[in-house]
Image 1 (cartoon, one colour):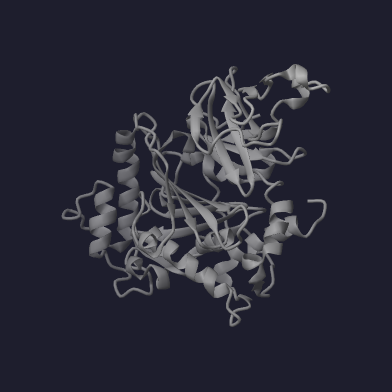
Image 2 (cartoon, one colour):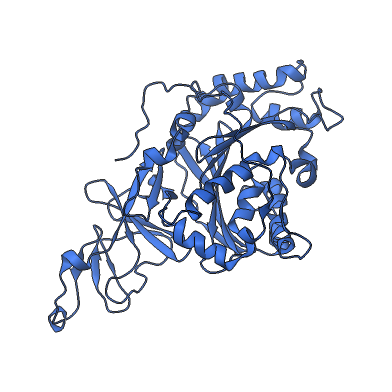
Length: 437
């Protein structure tokens, strides 16, 4: 059963600090990022056992609407049913193993295999097997229908789990709905969608977005608008959070404590505040932005931001949903990153980017997804809404992966600001080190 978002006022997102877990200080071995054997262990014990964000409920508007989700060598077909429900199936013909539907989105009344023209209904049932009478053992539809996959929804997202004995999505998400329901992702529209095939391990990409420690080295041009030093890190059960204050210069920056030009021209202006008439000091910027967003921009966007606190309307609330989802959430908008493994190569991955904005009443055409294979020229260019900031991150990824193969590097030497990376690997261990997981 889908997890419902209550229409009445939701409790506020918990802001209390979580206890800092005792995870030790040992290096994270580089083999986790480069070893085919470690990848094989993930393919066997991780990906078939976890809930994975497969897509958006809004892409399944009518019966027969479908999309596919690829993770490693597996492909899942997710389909809106005639009764309005959503079902998921292994995307493979039960006759000879042909991939039934090509990756992507669409709408169909049935699914016909291009190999021998076996036809399956949107409910997964075998509707027709050509020359069924020539099979002496028969073609019983109750045995040869598409194999079902666990499927559930939360906040407008569709999740799947390949484990026939999977626990519920509600249990798996733990405190994530409590934290994120006030953002109302189900009201957000997709402005940009693209996938980049990047020459790095999927965990190399996950790590890059788990800490603010890299900002000084990777994004020095942003130090005039964010406090990378006093970042908050919270590790929950499987999942984690980071809160990065924006519209304030870093203590590393000479304009710390001042209302600099970038804050005026970017943050004040984007909130609808005329920087020429703003007379407040540095401590007044963030409350002024939150007030403008709540009282002026919210009604203009058709969005009610009363369930979010002031910090949520200004700052970057970064959440990680184990194992491969990261969110940068800015109140009015969000970036959703999905870090997917390559089917065979531990040195490659697929980086999915979704640029979301909360415009519940707007009629925004669904953008077509873009696919790119990474190159230095591409990684240096802003792509599809991520801007120069994301380009700076993705440019690093292949270089990190190459460096991990060096005899001069043995593993990740992590500091306290990188606690979410260590927490992530701790959760990985719970799956990979247990035969029963």
